[in-house]
Image (cartoon, rainbow, N blue to C red; front, side, top):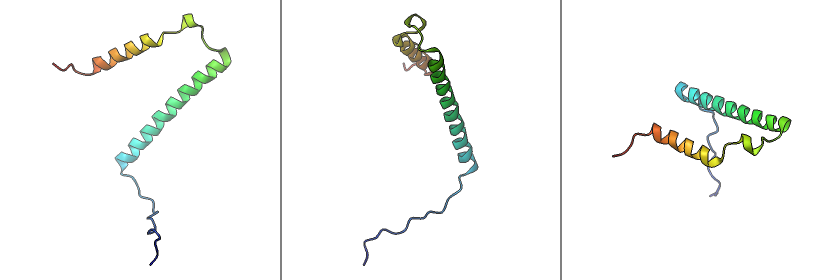
Length: 77
């Protein structure tokens, strides 16, 4: 008797329409995010990095983001 694994089912299965739409939406968002990131990199390549006086400290960005998250979530009492 052979110790070979059973052949895998390699036939493609169609997604349900709602699942296919969700995958397309995810792909569109990923593509938009990648385009935005590429635009930032191109801007840096063209204009260089901004000076420190033009930047927001990461601590301020973190606090603002945490405040937005807290506002979206109901308080537990």
